[in-house]
Length: 392
Image 1 (cartoon, one colour):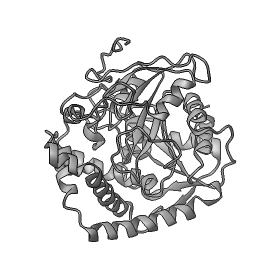
Image 2 (cartoon, one colour):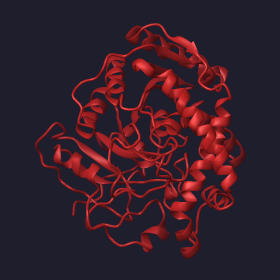
Image 3 (tube, helix red, strand yellow):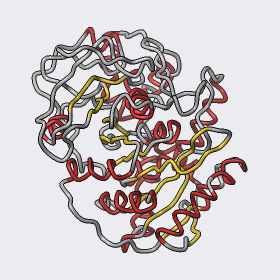
């Protein structure tokens, strides 16, 4: 087996290393990539960010199809990348394995749960990396680390052979330092060669209302680039009820699915969960059927609203997250506030199963902050093409 990559960033897994040479021929030939440690690699254990998960699961019999596709397209997998514990966090701070370094915002979190993949891409340890996104785990770290990232349409790219968190929200996703490569990877994983022409260009006013004034100002040049590329932006309100209400519904439904997926394992194994993850996992066991029914009604309404907004190949422009990456070791109360505002933005795509691309077009206080394009289900190639056009 190949050696663990030279890694001063703590981005790669030492406890479950795997590396595979690609086919050497194809659209990704000559490129290297990292794989978030939720994807199975034949003959190796999948760690899921948890020593206890690693200890209680056998080596995988087969390699996850999405990894196999990238290898068949010519790219070389150089290692598995760190993830938050059970992928149930947005920070990238794993109590067991540490926090990968965010080279684009020193002293700040890389974001999770695809922390290692984002850090390795931003730090040029790989050309691109595979992550996953349930509540924002590609989009948030891409924004924090100043790189491109995509959450594809729910169900478009196979998650077979990957650890599940909340199945109705889980998607794979990928990172790259440039939009051209992000699109190239999309052609491999989505099987698309062309994109439809975009319709109306919309600006999410209630999304921007969640930002501090510094972030709003920092994103103005990015909005200028987007307008130049796709035309004037029509101001709209995404959620009449308020995006925080959409987030609360997302939180309940995601939590219920997490308990269904992982609750029995947690009860049986009694894993030593880290702070934040432990409390959230305990809370999932308290969700009631009435909670789920109320949240599902909100999700259904949100999905109808997004279908209406995005018809005719419309594109929605919104902040990826409300601010630059929080500082390392930020107190829990401050992180909870940031998480709530971030998830109020990130839950939109999750509720409706929509594709979303985040572009690293802005800087605030010397740190990156992303802006996103979101489109109707199935319009992944449209977003990738627009990102490429905007990036120039």
